[in-house]
Each structure stands twice: as structure tokens, then as C-alpha cells.
Length: 176
Image (cartoon, rainbow, N blue to C red):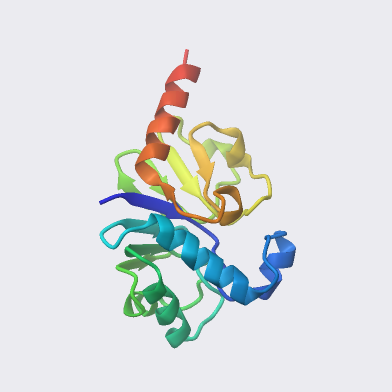
């Protein structure tokens, strides 16, 4: 089993194509491409952490349909556009849905929105976040923080364990 990360899919959101200059001509093309790219990487026994903004749709049948189209087991760390109750997302096929950040192993935190206060960024932790898409955030300036918005990860889930190893190596090289 592999573990993956992705954020800000925004399934069904026409305006995000223009707002974030996504390379799609329509919502249908965007949705189909995101599903194809996801499924080209994620296998049925893999686990994907979605760091918020899965879809703007509030319709249970649409959420359920989208979740079912995507390979693997899925956990949702809810974003500002995930507006249903956590239990609704579980009913739609996510194993877990939570509004709070999640520690997936000691020292590794998954969250939707990045911190805006640098005093909250502990140097001995690794943080993965979304929300900002291509926009700069304070956390972008820290080697122990990584944005996994789809625009920054080539519209496909990235391997969590490889990312952790790379960040730990980078931190070690930069430490005095």
C-alpha cells in the first residue's frame, strides 16, 4: 500500500479553470483528466489524503459518484469549499472526513489552510497543505512545508512517503 496526497481538486467548479489558469477547456475535460491522472497512479489498496476542496457540489449523489470513480481508499481533511457535514462525506465513500488538521505519523501534519503566523511553524515538524493553489503563502518559505494543490503537483496525487523522505533530507542538509 502506498500513501498519496493531493488538494484542491475542485471537481465541477467551472470558475477555477479561469481563476487558476488550469489547462482545461471545460469542467468536463477537467473532471475527466483529474480522474484519469489519479487512477493512473493510485491502486485499489492505496490511501489518498485529500487536503480539502474536493468539490463545490453539495449534492450527495455527485460527491458519491466522484469518490467512486477514484481508485484507492480516501481520507478528506475538509477545506473551506467542503461544506457538508463530515459524516456526509463518509457516507459518500471517504473513510474519514474531518475539519481539523491530521497527524499521520509523528511530526507529519496534514492540513487544508496554511498558517499565516510563522510562530506556529515548528521546525521539527513537516507540514503539507493546500488552499492557496498557485498563490504564495508564508509556509512556502520553509523547507519543512509543502503545498500539494493540484496546480503545484501536476494535477495528480504525489507519494507521501517519498515527499517526507525528501523533506527530511533537505532539512538535515540545511541544519547547522
